[in-house]
Amino acid sequence: EKGGYDYFMLKEIAEQPKAVADTLLGRIDAAGSLRLDELRISPAELREVDKVVIVACGTAFHAGLIAKYAIEHWTRIPCEVELASEFRYRDPILDPRTLVIAISQSGETMDTLMALRHAREQGSKVLAICNTNGSTIPRESDAVLYTHAGPEVAVASTKAFLTQLVACYLVALYLGQTRGTKWGDEIHAVIRDLSRISDEVERVLETMEPVRRLARSLADKNTVLFLGRHVGYPVALEGALKLKELAYMHAEGFAAGELKHGPIALIEQDLPVVVVVPSPRGRSVLHDKIVSNIQEIRARGARTIVIAEEGDEAVVPYADHLISIPATPTLLQPLVATVPLQVFACELATARGNEVDQPRNLAKSVTVE
Ligand code: F6R
Image (tube, rainbow, N blue to C red; front, top):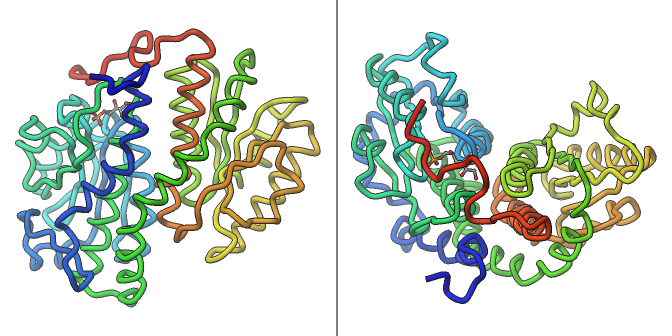
C-alpha cells in the first residue's frame, strides 16, 4: 500500500503533481475561465461579500496565510486569517456579508469546526476547503470546494497542503472573475500558469537528491531557522513546522524583514538558515531586500540554504547551498517552494531515526479542542 516507498510520507510527497492536477480537473473550461458551479454560493451572493475570514489549524493555517495574499491582490476584498483555536474566544466581527473559509484536510478538526459553528451563528456564510468527502466540516458548511489529494495517511501534511493552496487560488481567482477586477488579464494568465504547475512540481521532485544529502549532513544540529517574505513567509513557517513535527528539532520561521527587529541575535557560526527567495521578476524590490538579508546573516556566520528561482544569479555568491526551483508567478511560488522543505524534513527525520509517518505525540486528526 506504500507503493514501493519506505514511508507514506514519501509516497504522498511524490503524489503531489497528480494531486495538484486532480484538484484543478474540471474546474477550468476550454476558454480558460473558472467553473465552480459546485460551490453552491451564487455569483450574486459572492458579489455582496465585503470581508473574507479564513480559519484553520497547523499546515492548513499556513495555506490560509498564503491565500490572503492572493485574495486581497486579485479581489481587493479585505481578508483576515486566524488560527481556528483562537477565533471564537475573541468575539470576532462577523455578519452576513463576511465569507468565512474553513480549511481542513480531515474535515474533523474540532478547533476548526467550533470556529465555523460560531461564524454561522453570527449569520456568516461558510465555505469549506476539505479533502475528506462527507466529513463533518463540509457537512456543517454552506458550501464546499473539495481538494482531490486522495487519502493522506502520514501524519505530516504534504499533498493536502499543495491542494489546499490550489483550492485557495481557485477561490481567489473565482471571486475576482465573478466580481470583475482590474486584474482581469492577470487572472487569465495565472489560470494558464496554474494549469501547468503540476509539471513544475514534478520537475522539483526530480532534483531532490542534493536536498536529501544536505538534510543528512545536518542530522546532529539542534536548530534550523527559516526566512521568507511575502508568500515566502508562510512557506518558511511551514518548513519550520514540518521540521519540528518530524525531526523534533527546534525550528522557527520568520518574516525576513523582522530579522533586524530581534531574531538576527540568534545567528551564530554554522547555524543553518533556510531562505525562501521571491522571484527576481515581478516584485523585484522584495528580491533585492532578501538578498541583503542573506548577505547579513552569512556575514554573521550562518550557513545559508537558499531556495531561489532558476537563473537567479544574484543569490549565488551568498548561498552555501542553492536549491533551484522553476520560475512561477510570485503568488504561485509556494506550490514549488514548499516541496524541497517537505523532502528536507522527511530526510532529516529519517537520519535522526524518527518514525516519519507517526511522529511522537501527534495524531492525524485532532478531534478535541
Ligand atoms: C502538520 C499537520 C497539522 C494539520 C492540522 C489541521 O503537518 O498535519 O498541522 O495541518 O492539524 O488538520 P486538518 O487540515 O485535518 O484540519
